[in-house]
Length: 275
Image (cartoon, rainbow, N blue to C red; front, side):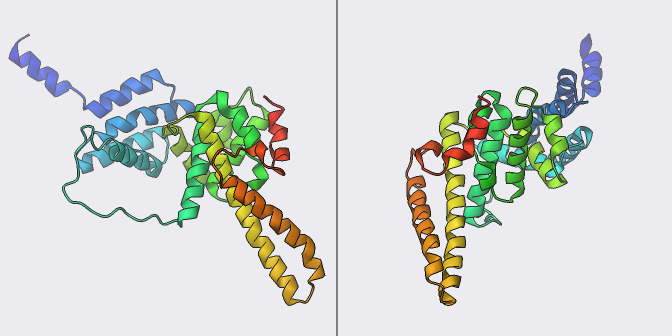
């Protein structure tokens, strides 16, 4: 074989990201959304391992374009991978900078995290879908795009739990924002922990937010009635407000699940029948 033959082999060798991408596209059918998402998810650690920022960006763009997925979602997953594996071989930054503050208020960010966590568990674990469907009353979810993604998952599961598929889910998404969120979920590893406990924590927090929103609405209505001198009409609302405060206190206590709180039980029965 000799030195010349070895040199020729080296010159013909493809870059590692290209090699991994070819291997993955042979393993997965990129003609389907599931296949493209599987390839993207598997490529994240390979792309995150490229130290040259320009090179990493170029390969990220190429992978996203070839798979027809969101570049922004793929970059976000690569960034998270680098941050999580910073002590495991990836290059550490030489300049210490303050963490970039979130553009979302703390409560909104926490709500987004809970919605993404539930959606990720729902997508990655078919066996946990009945529990999530039984635990999350759709009407209590907000209008955030992450909530729309979860609502769509639950609606599709409700229609056809045995034939739930990602392509059907993508087709049901109302806009590009929700499709991008779905693509991000597909390449994002699900939350780490005991799944039933995670589901209970996420749903309890979302219920708490709903109750707190209802409290604020009732307070405004009661104040409006009082200003108008309609104190008698506000009595029933005040009773309802007291009940909501009781639910709020219960939801703030660890270990309080959906069915331990009066008034929430009906929300999950429609889905629970599917188990």
